[in-house]
Length: 228
Image 1 (tube, rainbow, N blue to C red):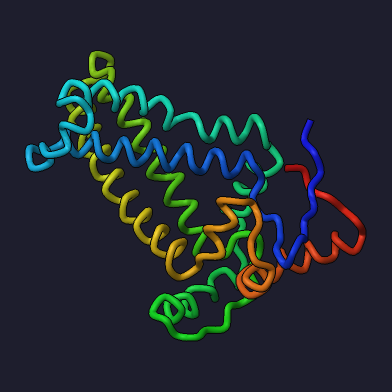
Image 2 (cartoon, rainbow, N blue to C red):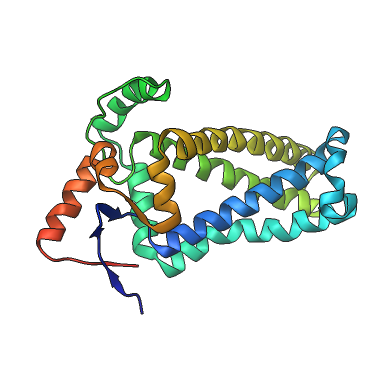
């Protein structure tokens, strides 16, 4: 049974549940291993990675095992925390004028300049783009990977396209990941803390997610709790 936790504590707000954090890091870890083993399998220039995985055959085996793990986070999140999962999906596909207004200010902030952020919800416009691109490329990677893994069920042309889509999607997902990592470790370090502990600095939330901040504060006044 999920226990209720304090939404506001020590100047911080509880933003990410245990299930959200666990599935995030399972996804990150499996992605990293798939990227490294995939590079080794993709081109000779990455042969220096071979000792990490016990050679080429070892990399093939690990790649296939971790590919299965890569599929699991969404299902784990959906099963153990459906409210947060479907809430996240709804947020990703719900766009307002404020979400679109987010981007001019974001570009300024990206280059170290001060910018006023339009009122944002639980996830801001940039996070929505990140989430949608991640969903898209992850789906393409999984679908094309299935075709590559079981080529006997598909035509030669489809398998060839599978390789192209698989490699291109992984490259594009990696580009998205690099921006995400930069923002989380350099520009918005408070967001990273939220994904590690669940709690995010309240002032950061107020500045970047004020719509959701106001909802939390209103619920706090009413004495509402959130399941972990």
